Length: 474
Image 1: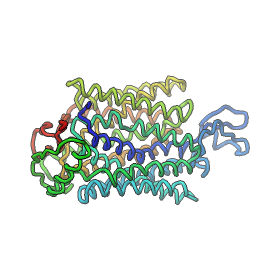
Image 2 (image 1 turned 90 degrees about the horizontal axis):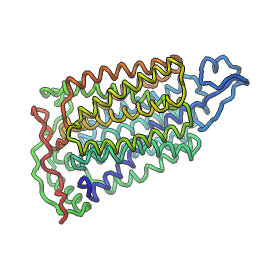
Image 3 (image 1 turned 180 degrees about the vertical axis):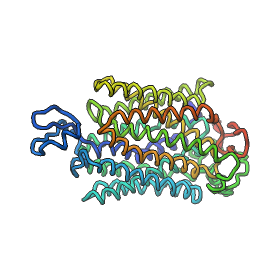
Image 4 (image 1 turned 135 degrees about the vertical axis):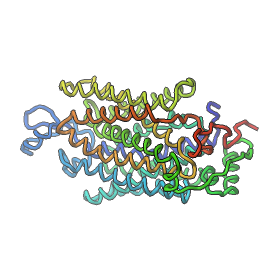
């Protein structure tokens, strides 16, 4: 099969897509805080908060209210509560990143991954049952915890369960674009935020089943803990599901390390520091962009589905290019995506300055979103491929922590842009330009490394030598 995919790998891919719906809570926030255009009496249709604040409420009329959001129910229009709703969820992701990354390195990928999905199911139900905004904030905080668990733990679990050259398959075919489409469809058919929350919880049950009953613990993690017998049994189980013969593979001895031990390792802190900058930068740009997408001209649902379709198609293109062109490295992906982001949002800033709000804004916004998605692909892959197995989730968790710090800036930036729209575009351009320069001078190439062979003490990262399973059919 293409990319040496067998039955076990297919199950892993499907599990990742199902679990990724938990991360769709980011897109749900766009709908939960959605505020339609409005007009004051016979005045023009607008989103201008100054008009909203000065308008007599008896003359205020909402236009094309496509989704019954929490913002409308709790009267958050032009209020700091919209930013607060998103910020509390991002704080939950921040805390979860710290906890789940370290817990996963200590207790294993499987138990912590299952807990993360359980929390997502419970928090989604709690969101729908929220009787007041304080209870809602608690539910969103817990939802943020689960997002962190999926992004940090389940992602590492999935990538450690497949072959090195299949990582781009995950990014190419089982990705955030489908999650965005599924999330939008749930909100479209539900019509209001409470019912959408219940549907989210139910849709996560298949992911819970797969992680509990189908996927085994990561053999790479078991190896890092010296649990060799369990590792061999896990590899036999994987081979049985895959329909291939089990062939024992020689693994190098891995010394288990704490996060703090990794920090003290020569050369590691500088490498992590560079990755931290990348994650912080793309998070500010990405989450600000997502939260701002609900204000675009056109149909709310169609815009989000367009974003999803463009992402899905672009990821397939990315996979094709990555597989067939040797010159296309991780550095190429990262730097090219950042350059595209800066260019697109520079154009959008010029359109905003000239008070242009036509279809051209949507087109350039779509391309800019695509560039940000490619940047996310790059930082995820580079981070996973740069870190040792003994500390992979805790170090990637620290990177995700910096991303969550960046995500906390997004609701504030989005709120400010309600009053001064140019701030949004200028901020993305400045952050993107700084990140590009750092990437050009300091980013190391990591494409096609074997995750079981990464040792930070070495100056060179070992190439992909031996897959976990012999992929030749019996």
